[in-house]
Length: 111
Image (cartoon, rainbow, N blue to C red; front, side):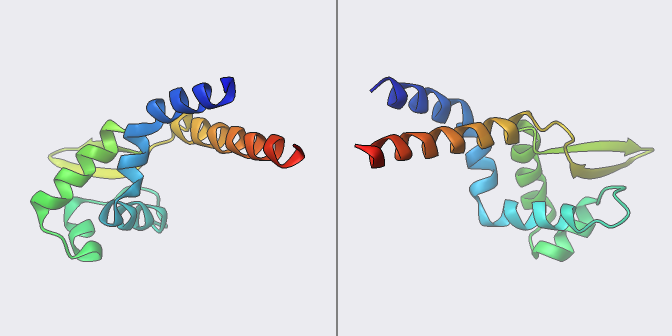
């Protein structure tokens, strides 16, 4: 029972991250940023071409991804370049959460 309380708390802590990466269009943005060979970041126009979304829709999805610490940006003059965040805290938390779930399942299988 204590394991389940911890998992619930961890789920609550990951909610924003899970919502951010759980949407199909945001996944397309993440994949586009992963494909950025130069790692200099992509502009909103670049992302509209890849995802077939409007500029306002891309901006909306980027805000959600930024708030969840998945995406960051740099400004060069008047241009913003978006890239995957180097802050892996949320991904590390997700990895620990998955390992905790696996441990609960293993404990139950042993019974």
